[in-house]
Image 1 (cartoon, helix red, strand yellow):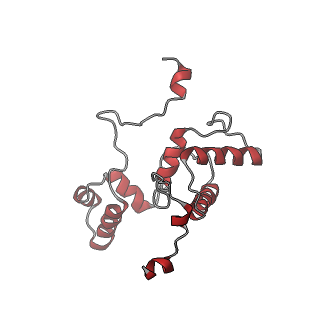
Image 2 (tube, helix red, strand yellow):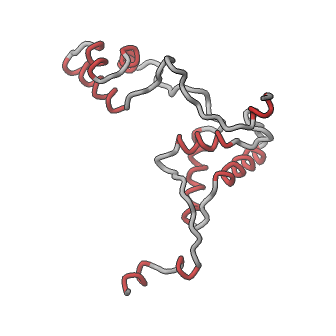
Image 3 (cartoon, rainbow, N blue to C red):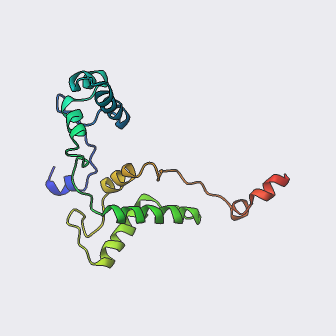
Length: 165
């Protein structure tokens, strides 16, 4: 395979066997372990073993160091992504849910309009991987669903009409 053909393929990121694990624990378990260490003076090592957290992670959380999320920077700012999420939700409320390709076009148009060139995107057009990670970052707000065709007459039925029947 050439580099060009690999560049357009969506990638599924899988951890190599035996490689280091990142965040195999919940934020709730970290909070419980931190509370246990602070309140009952349990050692960090024992709390880490009990709650199945790495000792170094628990130490960093207790010291308040390196609290930024791991990974690289996102292509859009946090504020820009939140505005995009609100726009997607609003169009869905209007009865026009967006598809993944529509979201990609929306981001491309936005970047072109403000005059910013994102080097990670080809012609300022985000790829399928970007949409997948965007949806993963906002999984509490956005969901992927399969749309169903519905006649306008059925869609126009209000809750008051349904109560009568």
